[in-house]
Length: 115
Length: 116
Image 1 (cartoon, rainbow over the protein chains, first blue to last red):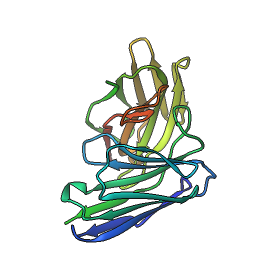
Image 2: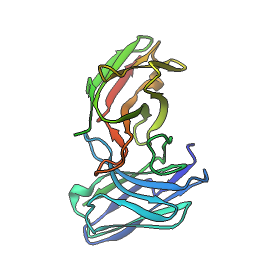
Image 3: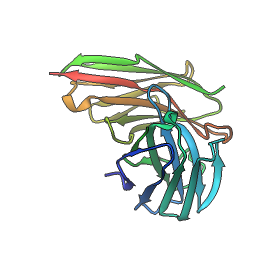
């Protein structure tokens, strides 16, 4: 266990559905991240929160909406997704942000399939 | 553009054999280089982190090397086990934050399969 827990592990949704991914870290870290991992592509940084403030939003479509209610919890709200959004969504945390010298701890991910 | 290239894309070896995975990078200014192991359906787990001044670091049967002059790194796995079957991801940390990649530049990974 890395100390970062993601739920659900698997999610199948239609393009008109609304769902949310949840991430919780038990490490006392100040920064949390959402990454997208598609087949044969490097991890793509989506959002970064530091001390509950969003510090990065990498031109992610508005159908992805993050929420960080406190430093231990991170959500990714999904609505009207497209089939190309099917991927493994990884949550991560680090003690501080930026993370150039920080160790990143990843959750197990949510495998999302959009039909 | 900051990039990390890994080779081979995939590799199959027999249990007990050694193997070496390669990572070349064009990241500046360089802060450190990390190797992660990612089991199928799981998140990446850190194996090693090396700074500019370190040219080798071990973690059990895993040994990473770094040549900062040629901007190359390798991950050597000794006496492979079935549980080593995973993707191995090279990540280079950049001192300057900015751009869509953030501080951490990820490679696509090498998928290793260890067969009995």
